[in-house]
Length: 326
Image 1: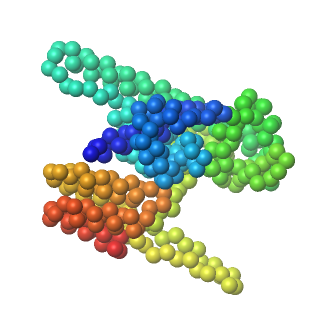
Image 2: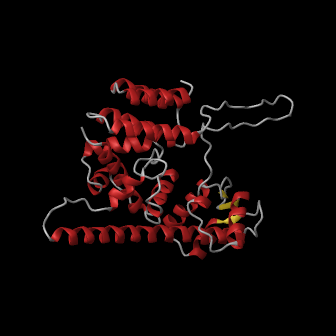
Image 3: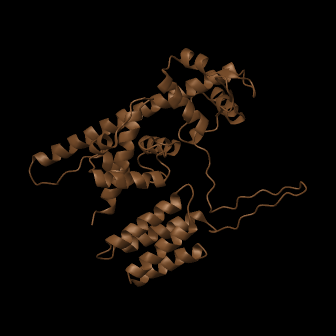
């Protein structure tokens, strides 16, 4: 059975392959077979991994096209490889960039390791510079949109004027505009080649004006996500309105993630743990996802407890189930 770490690395490799191909915008269609080959995948595992990533919302239903979530996931991992993203742990990103080798006793081995580390660092630095270029392009274009709208809502802005003044091709413009739209910074519901800046877009640009040296990634280009961990509701007093209140499934999201990490540590210490470890990985991925499902977390925890009859594992698995109200 393939190791969990290797499977995660392959998922990241396919995501990175498509991100690199899309660049700043392209009309070139990336065929499945080409993408799989570049990512080092055979046809069957490539389709399996693609299906997984699409299920997580990182690809659109158009096939090999990254969704907004996929772009953000990729750029977060590149800009801060030591921090976990929504779907990838730091080790996955670091393994992707780091050279894989065998430790030897020969005198050349030390120099070889140093060289590999330097190559990995150069590759990561190059990717970070590419991400920074994209961020700067988004900032410039958003600033121009703000100025054309005179910093006001409901002032129409012409697509072609912005594109021409920014010196962008149509694919380049579309790539930036789609990102800004997904972030809720612009509104394109109108016909006739015009759009508007949103209140969120106005606030974003004015924040940059006040602090032009602010690091605007990933926080400024990512909306706070509402997880099922916290109560989300709205109470209205209007006639016929309803009061929407959701119950806390978990009193403390941090505590749930702590329990999952504790479970993983215990499972890793048990021999013949591969199947159970896969369920733990799935459990953690679900808990960190944008729309986590209580039923999936409970089911994964139960599977781990049934596979490994270790007291410590069972107790922790039961604690997770209890925390989820299962």
